[in-house]
Amino acid sequence: MKVLQIIFCVLLVFSSTVFNLAQANLPNQYTLALKTALINLIRGPQELVWFLNSNKIQREYLSKKELTLQKNPNETQYPGSELSCEQKCVDDFSILSSVKKRMSPENGDFLLGFLNKKHDFIQHTPSKLGYCWGHATVTRNVGYLAQFDPEQKIELAPSEDNKRKFRIFYRKKIRKMMLGQVQVIPGFTNTREFSSHPLLINMFKSFVVNQWANRALRFGSIKFLFKGKKKVMSPEKVKKLVQEIQEKLSINHAPLLLFSPLGKPSASHVTVVYDLRIENDQIKICISDNNFYENEIRDCKTNLLITNNYSDIFYAPWKDKARDRFGKIGSMAFTQEDNFNMLRYQRAHHRQCLQRCALKIN
Picture 1 (tube, rainbow, N blue to C red):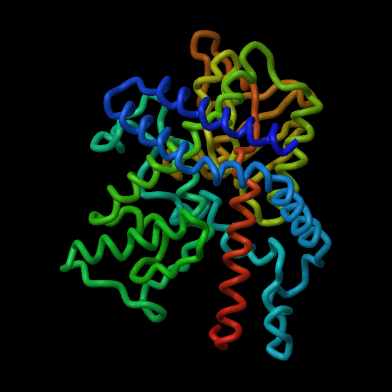
Picture 2 (cartoon, helix red, strand yellow; picture 1 turned 180 degrees about the horizontal axis):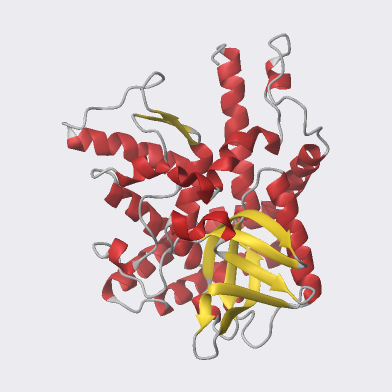
């Protein structure tokens, strides 16, 4: 069995290389695809470890999910000081309750300071496909892992006068958040202000491009392109997905959702889900679409509308003007790394909580 798993991973890495090169439509995209393919080959052993441990990761996620669901919603997250650090620092997803709120566009300060538009990346690697997956990933990573310190009470940042030192300091911070570590961000109040800074905005865009390449240009992403091409998901699968979204949101997990229009799987889109609403026998999956400004996505304006007893899914921004109806969705799924990244957020906050508690830092 182990041999078959190793062979599968070797084929996965090889296919990833071919797929990456096939995606290269422009000179700059060709360079990015080749670079990503080589990186995938180099980290082949890591992919093997990930594959062999995927069941273990899923079991840990489900275990912490159950612990979170069993908690009393009125229970205080950090009880009195007479309790031990292990008791104060809960080892489940409830430790993410405060940062999960940042994912809602009602609090637009925690969205990136630029959209997933071609003109926003005119000085970067151009892409016909867009960088939605990278944009959503960076948004969620910073939202869950940044500890903003505007008055620099916790940590001092270099002066902007020394531009090189300033950029290096924050590049390290962003890179560590992309790796799943909680980081103090001195001198900034929120994600929008941080990612819009003139000395940092292009750096953020580079991270978006890299996160996109590390996810979209992989063999595992190909299988989604073949879903939803000719028919929509079955009502049973849609109902199950809705139930999973409800559960994820209830444990402070804002999932990344990958979906595609019916008949056009290559036009897949990735966004952060921040709410789910049931209105008049219709279900709305509220998404923070990175192609629109916050006033256009607030109050669930950009939503995946599920009707007809889970039989039909529509997305308003993909309206078919020729037929004057909403754009029909062919398939939906959580991104491959969704649960794993939530585990990383939980582990990072739990670890930081224990460290701060041991040092008696509030």
